[in-house]
Amino acid sequence: MGTESPTKEKPIDSSLEPEKATFSAPEPEKDNRTAEQKAIDDWLPITSSRNAKWWYAAFHNVTAMVGAGVLSLPSAMANLGWGPGVVILILSWIITLYTLWQMVEMHEMVPGKRFDRYHELGQEAFGEKLGLWIVVPQQLICEVGVDIVYMVTGGKSLQKIHDLVCKKNCKSMKTSYFIMIFASVHFILAHLPNFNSIAGISLAAAIMSLSYSTIAWVASLKKGVQHDVAYGYKATTPPGTIFNFFSALGDVAFAYAGHNVVLEIQATIPSTPEKPSKGPMWRGVLLAYIVVALCYFPVALIGYWMFGNTVADNILTSLNKPTWLIVAANMFVVIHVIGSYQLYAMPVFDMIETLLVKKLRFKPTWFLRFTVRNLYVAFTMFVGITFPFFGALLGFFGGFAFAPTTYFLPCIMWLAIYKPKRFSLSWITNWICIILGLLLMILSPIGGLRQIVLNAKNYGFYQ
Image 1 (cartoon, one colour):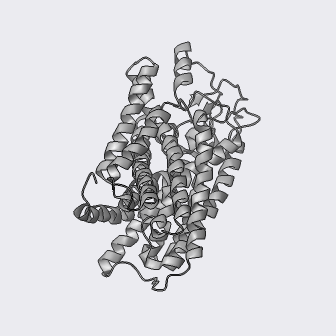
Image 2 (cartoon, one colour; image 1 turned 120 degrees about the vertical axis):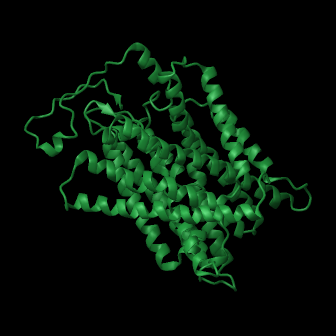
Image 3 (cartoon, one colour; image 1 turned 90 degrees about the vertical axis):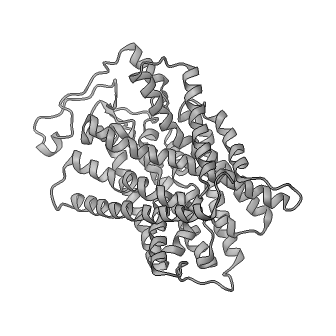
């Protein structure tokens, strides 16, 4: 399961109460890997480099969390309404910070082991086979889903830049071509070997996310409240209002999607018994969540305040002037989603390469990596070109996949491993998160799928 640490620790005291003894190893495990296994671990993306600093964790988490989802939050507010919208945004921030703390704590809960990947933690909680079946499909849906959506976002942002700069002087181009242009960058960057090798790209992406979020709410404030602004629900029928509400829940879930890479990020931080990785990781997470709050709340609330229920799926679409500022904001979006795409792709590369090398016994060569990663980029590009429904994709994937892995799967693992007493604060808190997360998972894909069906009727493929 988890990667074993060569560092020896003191044996567990037998006087520990049964509750704690259930999740502590009776004896620290030695590094019994063969030379071949060590060579493979040194080649795989997640375990090949463990010299990251705490601020790496900060900007990796900002890049993972503050993505294109922030630009859809004003639209989500329009479908949720002022009261429910504000409550859901704040609750989501608190719940996801809590579940992220749980994952950071569980990374090294067994002495001598590090759970470097989400599915390894799942195997510890649910068993070898069941843990894989519970975690891997959901994690893949999240990470591949994010990369597909970011293909669409990057392409549409490039198209927006083209249309604003050229206006009527340039020939009109299909969105498909802009998605291909965006994908061309990833055919190169995808060959960077591990998380630490994309640290510079991730830092630039984190700065860009803060920049375009600031531009979005400052430009909205500058534009002022529109003269025909209305804060009622967009839909004209009760069923439409309900479905839009469900879809907006998925938009919010998508905005808090960083949990799918948090263990993989923590795996890059060095750890010793005296200085475990959870200390620097938690500092990075706290800083990242402060940045998340500074991005999400002003964009969501000010964007909705200024434009009301006429706000576009992407807030930057509602802002056409000043042209230079909107061009800059869209360029920042492009740079950010380049970094974020790589961040979410790295665990997928790790899964595929682990399967090929450890299970199917392929040799860990540059050609294997070259082939796997190019095929993955081509696949996400093809799906993004085929289904360019930005808002609906967020709603569907947000509820179906991000709600479990972000809102309640860490809580279930916590209950399974730590076994807190019934009706204790920890037990109650976790069950509240599980119930709210389940509701989110069930309701939001309904609205998201409806949006996809509606868009498919009015929006041709390969546009």
